[in-house]
Length: 141
Image (cartoon, rainbow, N blue to C red; front, side, top):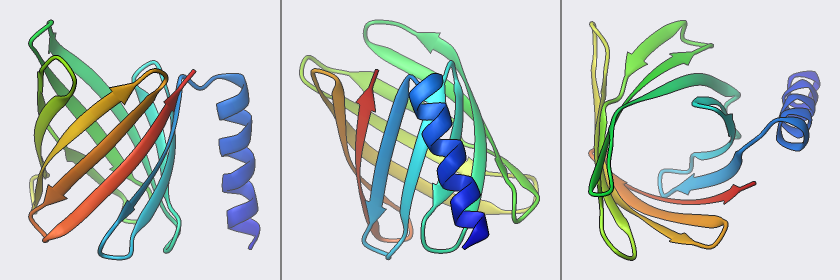
């Protein structure tokens, strides 16, 4: 319970003071995540198993038609760093994206999906190679 309280305090303080985005994601495999981000940095907490992940996302290419970003994740409990290159193709009303997570020792999930922006919100619907559907809601500040 103490760990949850600390995480909640961190998320509340960062979202109210510094956040550019806050999000909630749930997946059909029973996993759910809350996240907050600022200037390319993201903190993500998996609500069911106390998994915490810190991310720095660098955009290598960012144009009107597509974005290529290279997120570097650090999973605290596993003491594991991973890369997850993402290519996003922008259309008029939505964006299509594909990503692949890996590290030097493990080949991880690939994922595909749609991001649908509506005013200050972005809705995400996707699928990954573990046969999981993911749905995400992000609020921009």
